[in-house]
Image (cartoon, rainbow, N blue to C red; front, top):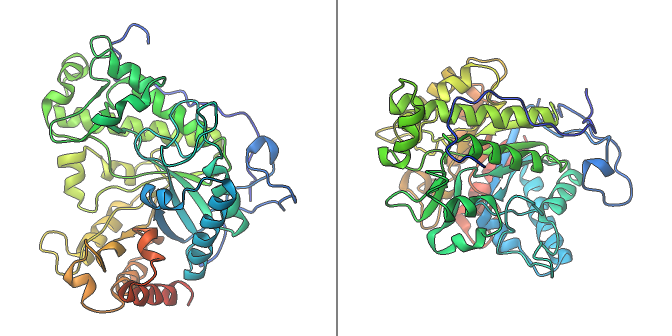
Length: 413
């Protein structure tokens, strides 16, 4: 088993086909082992060069969202550490071994970044930096408990229109402030409250890759992105870029290729940092929607090497769903994963069991998640992932408590 290398990080060499308009610009089998930690708390590679990535043959994962992070945020590092320790202990008790930790949701950083502004929910010091580094703390606590931690980012979604001023001093704000120079680098499509980066632009892709490289300087075990690719099907979103760089492709083909370039670039950036790190994508569970609305070429990513290590589709459907019944949809995803290098982790909708988003089929009987987990096992999935952490560790909700017990019984059997 190879141990994580302490070599300097390198961005991958990638030939871009896009455009630049501005003249400037088995159950608990660990696939790699960890070295014994020193008594001091060390977080970064240059202080802990022999640290090896912690990843499991079978992922039992959970999404720990920016909403969860806001609830965990505290005025002091000590209190944040205490809050996160309690959460990780609960996850371990259930049988979770992998955490997809939200570290950038709206072009903000839950870590000290030179490229993105600090997340507003955490306290700042006099220099405008985070008073403490939540990601450092999370990585140390996770590895202390043998949890794998994948840094989860939304690479293209930025702030709301009302909050764009928060990006002053960072690249997206420059693109926002000078739209005549940086044509279509960043815009807010009709109907969206957010600004979005355009994946067709080379400099945008390079910026995203630099942010991934920055994350890989931490002792994370992987990088994770979800289903936020193109925010609209409106041709006006990138009409000028497409006119310049369409290269004879249809708009749909061109947008698919842009997203594939971005995914490949993130993958290469992660692997150049450390080949033991994993890169995963969590697309929409409806395979057709990935093509019709998001321009995510999941069939290609699951069948060719060089795009991802695992795919975690959000198969957030019941057995009676008229469009995407669970068993049939999961079988379709299983059939897509023809590359030996791509693992299938099934995303499950725990959030539909109880609360405002509850659906009758999910909530009418106990053990619904366990039933879906059993189906995943029968189809040969490489793991499951639950959305989200808040529901998995919820207290004072009898329905979620019963569901958690059935999940734990499956994960710890």
